[in-house]
Length: 235
Image (cartoon, rainbow, N blue to C red; front, side):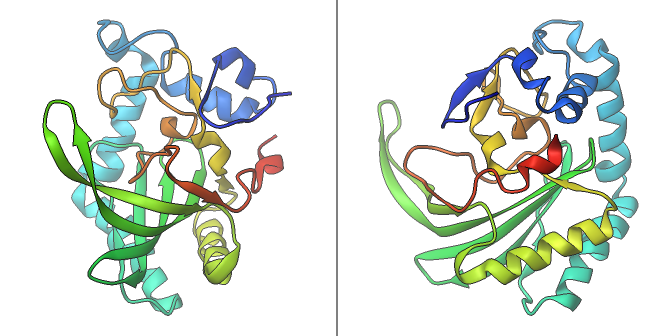
């Protein structure tokens, strides 16, 4: 049994027994133990297949618009009482993504982010509360401003519980038998896993094999909700 805690590292072989479908999907597309510096990385059959999937779903602008920006995003606009809904897919990443603006002031905003992976039939949803500008001190660049997040809501609780549930339902209606990847997978970094859309040397979480997200967890962020939401459905 994997004991989940924040920001732990896990061997791929330890993930395999409990979540074989998730594990097999990762292994299918990424060469565990080989980094991008190795010429064999991009010769791996899964990387080639991933590139073909991205080319079809994202680089083909007509297909992308029909499937996502003018497809599912427009469907959400029609069915939800929020007009500020937009697609946010950017770059050569293994997922579609979108955002619903829930609250916005001059100083901060609250947003619901949703992601649909292109590898395996997986998706996830999270609410980022109080996204705001924060000044930090950098040893080389001096003081600079970054975007900070106060809370991440990881399951249907609180003020936007019904919206979380509604977006969840619309995704599984659109993508038959899609499975929710809970936030617990954002807290585990997989040893020896490298993906082509991350910065060099950046450690990759389990979720990072499926989604390139707007945010990543750090200790300054409060987690609200059940980080194991729908976890049992993945076994």
